[in-house]
Length: 256
Length: 55
Image (cartoon, rainbow over all chains, first blue to last red; front, side):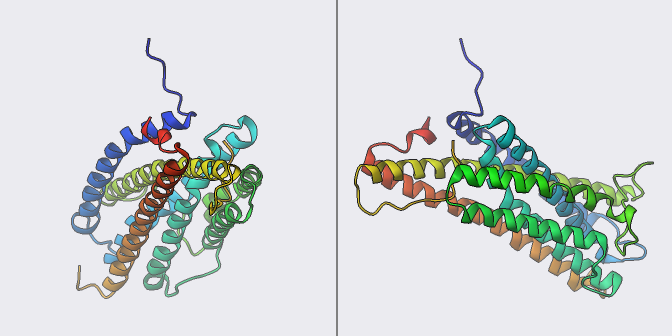
């Protein structure tokens, strides 16, 4: 009788990665092809913003990914602290650099959009500042993984830090409602439906799914890397205890 | 599109996105290549190491 694969088991997870990644890579490439065609060639310029509206097709998906990845990390942090799930640490650790990159992209594209539309690269308003705080939190998490030598301790500390930082996610989302900001209020996820024209909503949806599948693909690959890093660490320690010379110590790895 | 006075900002945004996405992909693949090499070295030394990935 065939048994259900247990994806908490690293070997089963590696098999899943081997099967899933070619498919998610192909879907990502197709979605990017359609998304970029719609965003750059098919969608009309905005009647007020002109061509700069095309920056929205990068800025908005990267902003959503920045928050989505943090939610993924918070769920994994919960898994680390409450259930001690064997892959939760790897999920958390491997998502952090990706979240940092998407947040960086969100800030830079926002700045490039802000200069022609607002006349400034940056203002310290609630939305921009809370996203910048998210970027700093991501950097802090990446740094924590690097500086704490004991993997189990690192995983627990990062999990607590991640969950504390999660309070920033609703602040980002509702900052434009709670405070007067230069940043526009929500135009897609809002009561009463999107206010954006379908000709612009469609490329936005395709680019959002492209970014999402890109993250899924890279995250699967990064989790695989974390599993392999644990194995390298374990074997290095085995070799070291057997008295072999020149064994590199791979630190800051989560405990299995 | 190229006649827009802010066309440069659009190009810059897409170039930055390309660079960030390429960096994420290259970093992930390079990390994998490095780990695989290290595992192979350790496997040769200890007689274990590659089975987890091959299973």
